[in-house]
Amino acid sequence: MAKNYFNITLLFCLFSFSAMAQEGKPQQNDGLGFYPNPVSNGKIYITSKTSLEKEIMIFDVLGKKVLQTTTTTKELNISSIPTGVYIIKIKEEETTVTRKLIVR
Image (cartoon, rainbow, N blue to C red; front, side, top):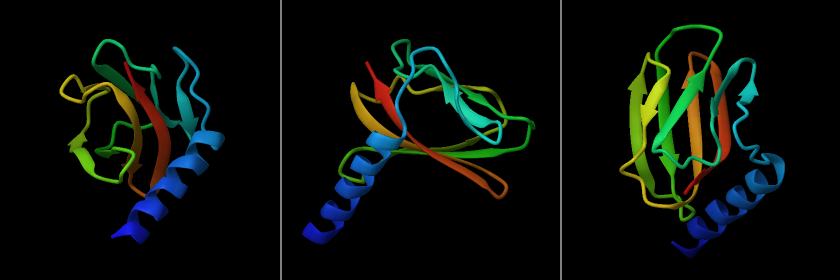
């Protein structure tokens, strides 16, 4: 169990350094991303070049999945997630983007 927490912590640290949050700007990879980050209104907006179905997973810093959903819309309500730092994973077909998400 401790090994799993170490791996998740290491993963979180790597993403913390590589994915710097920019307020109000989309974080993107091949057109797939989200904004705003940090989130203060309980909603994020998914950006994509297509309107295909997206699978979204949000994990806390210990690696526990706090949200998993699929959507074809651009808006995602995350108001049920408490304030904190999370990892968000967005998957659309073969493209996957993993970023740090800050909820205020």
